[in-house]
Length: 220
Image 1 (tube, rainbow, N blue to C red):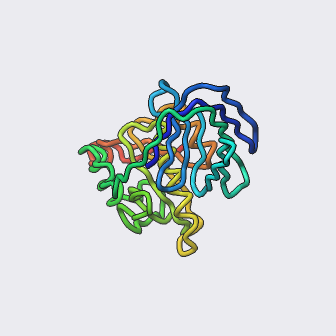
Image 2: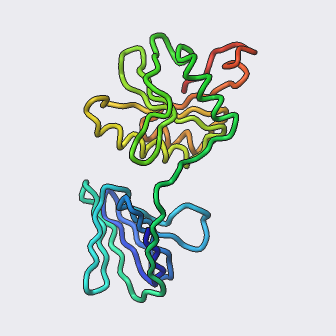
């Protein structure tokens, strides 16, 4: 991972245009090729970013051009570099889920029929190059479905599932792959983002999955 702190301005050219005026920012370049631009606020959320696959060209004039496969570009005009370092992080062991999330995954995998007639499990913890997707299954029509399970469904969970779907849909053996975002509670903003990306949302009832209450889930 490369960390660059620089005074720079940033322009995005693609489906729309956006401009960040000159300021001191953190540029985060990951081993997967992604680049994100951060300010010293907004928690983890970047000001702008380019997801992989993409390429970075550093010009002699201080202009960095990041281009993705769709031809969209992030143009970063470097005025001054204050820090530039690279670090080898190694293979990440992945997120260790809390007891409720892990149990939700186990229960749903054992009771795929609650999502609809004919739904069948392919595999739990299906591997991808960026980590395992919680459940890979097939719906009643035989379409492959990737399910990401959270205790509380927020925007970062939708982003995580989106990255999984981008990779899974490159695999001709299982594509096309649809997405389902499942959680005990789904925040309104996460639901809006999921809907915009064609991802279905499912509210999971922990007690119902354990057979304590009515086992009808709510699919939106």
